[in-house]
Length: 449
Image (cartoon, rainbow, N blue to C red; front, side, top):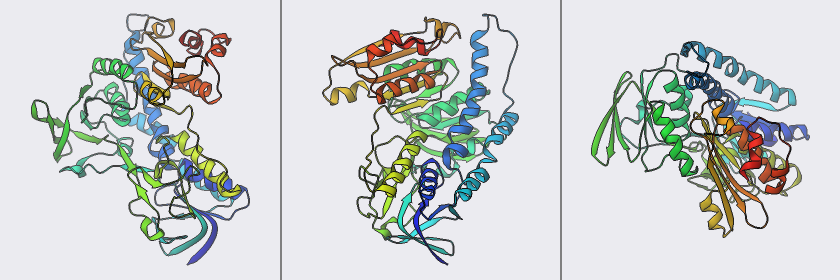
């Protein structure tokens, strides 16, 4: 059946749902499509369920740190019970998301979409024509091209494990490896992280990463750098992971092997070439308005777009809102990623806001770097956290906050404050004079700038 709409959105994550809801509310006739349960990565397979597991792991770690400081007794993670608790967040979410869209008046479709023309897609037996289409299909584990790749467990599968394997090897040293690795270690698993390059978490400040690596080792996690995985063989419970290292070929035995070597836009089977949509390795090529550079009827947002944003929920929400505004009012709004923030939910968390030192120097900026090990500060000593550091970049003369890099208790919430300061152009002098509640992490800001 052929149907016509003003806007058709492919993908029901944060970017896609934002576009659909805003355009429908403004009076447009909107359809939305997804081949998987409605809700996207964050609510179902990423941020939200992951943070539930992180919360449990943090409790175990904090109890361990506070032993001999007034806390006694044993605690452990009951993994099946924790996964059941996680499911109370994820199980109702697809129905809630679809009902929300339907209530708004959006017509919903289920199935894998593919382009059959510049302004048309096919979903099952339906052909949907639209004045504009928005691709917001998110990302998927990138292909590694190694023998035995089919044995790797995806991050979404990890979040549904009914039993936690005893020995886990993570292929790759990014967000997934450090977040899930720290969770698994606190739940009693033996964890190994195999990082191909010489530095894990390359987009984060390396001084802070080095301190996190010490803390990670102390948690019993073996992080191997310069370890390029060349193959996986065996069966669940009896895998052999082969890696090329400086000392030759090494074999790591595991009950489960997890893909943690990065994600790629999930766009390969959309037949984008049929619609004349150009792509690169980062996704659909878009301009500053998030419109396809080669097909003006198509926009892209979130992980599917080669936009320069980070593969995180706030960027997907932001880009979805920007696409909606441009669809409704003409291309008037361009991307602005000032104060971009990113956090690794390791234990403790590692945050990065704004520029790194290398990026600031590349732009020719003159700045001071304020940094310190804060493990002796009250906010860290109170919870016995030995890994607590910061680095803040302040432009000379203007007092602009260029970047902030944080490791330690509540680094995620602390990152939000620096993101606000950068986005709202709150200068260092103003932060020094702020009357923060004490004792809180925020009250440290006056001493950090």
